Length: 124
Image 1 (cartoon, one colour):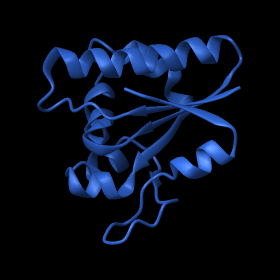
Image 2 (image 1 turned 120 degrees about the vertical axis):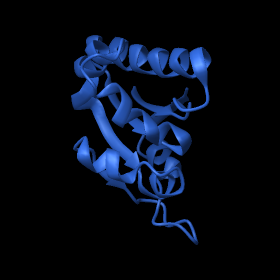
Image 3 (image 1 turned 90 degrees about the vertical axis):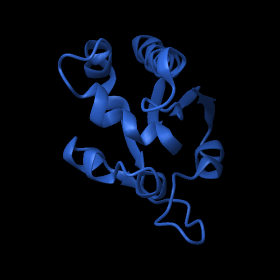
């Protein structure tokens, strides 16, 4: 099995629910990683704001983030543009993903490609 974790929750407006969704997404990635399952994490939609937040050492989820950091595939380029998080994503060292050339955008991750490559997609 291969797992793709898609983080969509918004740290800016989502409050505890958004934090819980992002935390559980990273916790699922950690679980898959510990089991030796191929796992990739994607930040998409308003979730592209998370890398700039959880990369800060004083964030309560920072330790979990560091434990799965090498499993992060990247940040949706088009979503980062729309949600104003492109600079933070780049500054945090993440790849901007443009596999899916959606008209009017700079590109997003391709869920179709992930599924075709055998990934099960989980959204948080």
